[in-house]
Length: 261
Image (cartoon, rainbow, N blue to C red; front, side, top):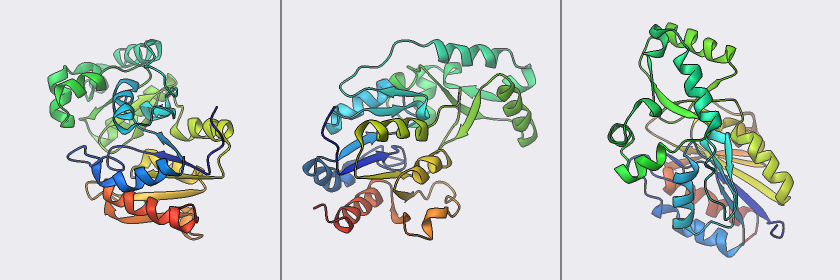
């Protein structure tokens, strides 16, 4: 275990630390460098798989910190490698297969797509799309039916213990553990002085409200999140700039606000 950090950062990836269109994170380099200098912890928290996050975590030099994967359904340990146990994922696929045809045909999950299709709908290169298909805990996909059928679909899944969460692009199915659940465990383990969470989508709200500071990162590709309770007290703020540019500005401002620099 490392020494308790002054600041432990939990960050969503797509549309937050990573640009929605280009998947670039370079605009956030100054803040990432400042956080590294302060020995702050940076925990990625995303719907991405352990295989995807492991690759990105190495690229950013953040292997010393764990990562929350597949929307909180799993955890990639610090310096760890992706878990090869796919039991939970296969259970979700089995439950999907047991739904009536009129519901099942409206949902197209990653397990129903080949690598080329995942690449096309995500904009990822095929090598990265292959990592996105290496799932252990959850199934993202596209809903292609009516709103009424969607309600029936979600109810049928819930009867089997499967929860659904709306992210920036996909409807993701899992057995219910969230980013905030994993976050609480990591806060208890690391005991940081301050915590901050950054996100842009409905599946980030619990995480944003769990942290001492929450930062809603602007994403012009989706409707803005509704007002959160912490905004009145200043514990939750919003960026003007989107993606990694907004992430960078917000984190540098927070470092200055806390006199950590």
